[in-house]
Amino acid sequence: MIHPALRPLRCPVCVAPLADPAGSAGPAGPAGAVRCAAGHSFDVERSGYLNLRTGRARRVSGDTAEMVQARVDFLGRGHYAPLTARLVQLATAQAVEGNPPGAPEVVLEIGAGTAHHLAAVVDAAPRRFGIAVDVSKYALRRAARAHPRIGAVAFDVVDRWPLPDASVDVLLDVFAPRDLAEMRRLLRPGGTLLLVTPGEGHLAELREPLGLVGVQPGKRERLADELSGRFDRLAAETLTRTLRLGVDEAVDVALMGPTGHHTGRPELHRRLVAAWPPGRATLDVTASFVLHRATVGPTAAQR
Image (cartoon, rainbow, N blue to C red; front, side, top):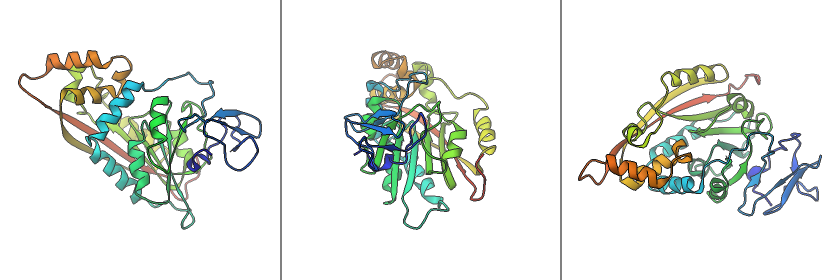
């Protein structure tokens, strides 16, 4: 069977519930297929993730194997541990209204990658189940094994997301594409959106030598305006720390982002070594995150 966390998912073509070919309540797997009553069928990959991509949207391949490995190595060294810890705190602080006592909580992460942050949020409460969404098969293979209560799924975020209205308690988005209308639709009354964007100084020391893109002026203000049009009880905070990175670690953090799609490790390594301060084993690099928290009012109508 596919992971229990994935059972709320719906057919991305007709939005009907998914079931196994025999018609029982849960989709079948692994390495099988699930389908809806209309006969639309989707693969459960051998590595454990469900593929709900339809091909109607532009096919985006997501992070490469090299990019995913860089993420595993970098996050595994604890460099972003303060961000993970704060996400756990914020996800736990907001009680979701309307849930029966003892009911499971659903935590959805868009662009989850390896589900590093999601695993920590899910692990913090025994009734939480996580849904890790990505399009990279390399990331999804990792996400499917990130935590016993996490299921991994691929779907096209530019289309309607294959989940029912008001079905998610906490929604995470860390440096990932976003669709605020869909996020608002999926969150239950009292549910929380945790959206992380880079601060103005994020990786500033690496931008010039590695050709990283900086934060556009006014981007934070524009996002705040967009959020205020759909959500309630808005808050934002900035979390900044100094990372002490060696050359390989600095290359890893660059590979984790958009740069990794067009520049490989050998070229990034060459550029960084050429700009590295003589005699230094490490370089101080700024990590800056803006954490936006927005909730759905308990009596607000779906917009």
